[in-house]
Length: 507
Image (cartoon, rainbow, N blue to C red):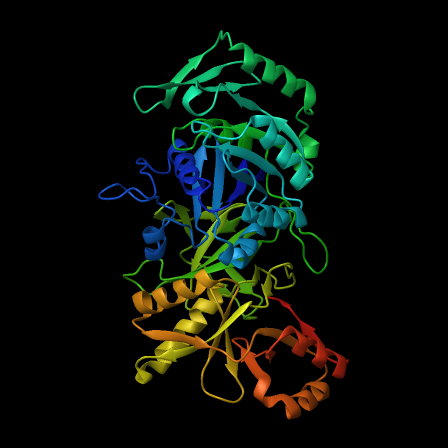
């Protein structure tokens, strides 16, 4: 069964058209029946993948959603990742749960900083990448420039699979280099509505470009692609439906089925009999009417059956999974069974955490889901001091999701939140108010960064005796050194060689 699963993510810089592409893929896959441009005003429908209020206001993806659709006997699990750099941590964890990725590049802008960052995360895990150069119906850079930039900046071989016949005002369609057919724009909106020309005479300049491209770039090599060394490149326009079906076909034909996942004892293969999986994301309040909390599990091996008992590594005792959920855009269905590569949502009340391994025998631990040291620290001040209990619950919930990290100082009552980017702070305040009815303000913190402390109990006690003012606990109760500067971290490391000051913490 695993051969019929494709679990992939879409990565891009904000505004490269990722949310529009996500929606069109779902539309072609039959998961949704109405596409509306994401930022359209008035009554137009929002992209179904962007459900949180702040996303709808700003037209950006903040959370990583999961959407499943089926086409031609293959089940596609699409993980939508936040494009905004302030959410790199959540995105990093989402990319641990996929087997391949589509990288979206704006034809006018080329590779932007966030695309590059996300690409590096994919490279760490050798995730194969298909490149989609979007918005060719508008004025953009020359195709050769774009291809060479991908090759040079990302050190990848590129293999064009399609080619635009003109760009911007001269755009006349997309040529499929494999079949020689051209998809043509139609009507006033110049969209692709299904018109394909088979016997095409191309303009001289385009014919010359294609001849050069086919001579100058390597041919498609499945092994090189799956090894993360070559990227097939498709040109198109998500908004006008060009190249969307070709992308789905490429994922179906070339993208790998579920891959083995790393554990402390070596990789676990999809055909391993025991049911195993890991939680890569927890999302609270997806349904504002119910205070629900859903843990997203990537199934790694075995055939999961509804009602099964699995043991989370963080809990140590088995839980019965009675109502696992599959996500079809905004609709949810109870999953009676799931195969390796599938993503299922497990409703729970805080028992499941990001990084937990779930298994039947509780003998396996999947690795590689880190927390990163925050780059911005702020104190949280309540406008209404009677809501302390609600605030603590909200901060614990949101830190479990990976939106923020929360630190409880050993001395002093004001809790500190840590984030990787400024936008996370806006999301924190917005969600505290909308979901928890808590009004809070953020104030400057005396600290600049945080490091997790590891070492023998005595070394930790000795350190604490002198540095109580700078110590906090994270939500797991682990000790954290709150530093006023990077110099401070270096100074303490020199003075305390028995302790490790770590910028990441395995979850």
